[in-house]
Image (cartoon, rainbow over all chains, first blue to last red; front, side):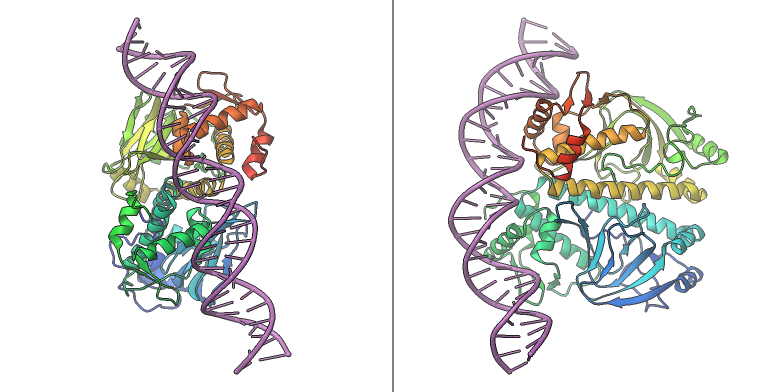
Length: 248
Length: 248
DNA sequence: CGAAGGGTTGATATTTGTCAATCAAAGTGG
DNA sequence: CCACTTTGATTGACAAATATCAACCCTTCG
């Protein structure tokens, strides 16, 4: 499972999304398996928001009183370490559920990297809805299992792969995540900084920068500017990812 | 959350376990929140097994047709990498649920490190039970959320900490996992090899060995033999874990 | 008794991190 | 509109952590 794409879209196709009714973004995100009645309930309980880039949805340690269904934008999830550095736990994209956790407090910060839109719902109400609509609870379980598989996949990347392989895996994962959302517009948006990527992959920003430079030198990627990225040679990236060491 | 102790025991106390009825190990593992009727159902659908050390419960890629509730023993979960090495994704102890995944196939191998006992249930039947008993589904969701938090915690350890800090974190996590299970017998069992630990922490077995030696030299731990480990100075280990660099 | 598995230790190589200088782009305020 | 600051990116020289390779020991098990 792709560590950058935790969602499982089950049987339905994510692209056939209806316009958002109230806030309950029909057939989308967690609401995918709901019937009309459940959607109405959810609409009553949630509300829609828009925020600019760099907004913080919640912080590690805050009481986990709300969950968020991301409708638009990219979010960075990160934990603050005792020594002041941060570990980026993951990135989230449209359709992902944020902030529904096991504990009483959020286990990480959630920060928008781009302007974003999302539904917000009180946790207590979401819990009540889960009890009322088994299909919804099942969906949350599925998303959780998917997220778990993705995190384990990412663990393998961070624990065992070389710097080049990690960056290659990141790029492939990013492309995959966008492709599955039906956004294969050629250039993929990459709003995260070298530092974000390093904190995600367990590398320093300098190492990430050097690796990007090397990839560009080989003609495997290009950065046309405007926070865009173009993947020119997926085969090369996939080989690197698999561990075939082409020397940089 | 402790990466070696994924279970969430909710409100009840894990130690008050009844003798196992049929296979459905009342008040234990996933069955903790079930009433008598549900336990009966589960008993009819599952069966109990014992296996010697080094047995394989399932392999990565096998169709995920069964789930396992571990009653006794320690299990290593690992993924095989293309280059032949392995990444240990986690260890599981009594009370943990194994093999209930999002995908159609198991995402990792599960291998017993000690002799073990467990309940086995067909996945389709477990799914049916989940639909029938919301409390059980809720419990599985809780366990999944707990596992996710634990994996993220472990990710931080592997991505950002020094070798010493990783080993210290491992030892503390192991102690914590056993303590929560009510097994504070002083010496904790440690059936995993240096290689297993290295594959868990993203280190080589040599680095793990050297770190153990250093810890023993400082008098922080002792290995009385018989796959046992004694923690002599938790404070020192916790400091290392937090990043205060006492030089070895 | 010999082989195999696990553990320890040393010498050396390699990767990646650290520190530092510089540059470009994007805001910001007068 | 233009300094001025801030943020992100790049690159180099160097240091440090960890991996790699290799030898050896001990215990267990057939």
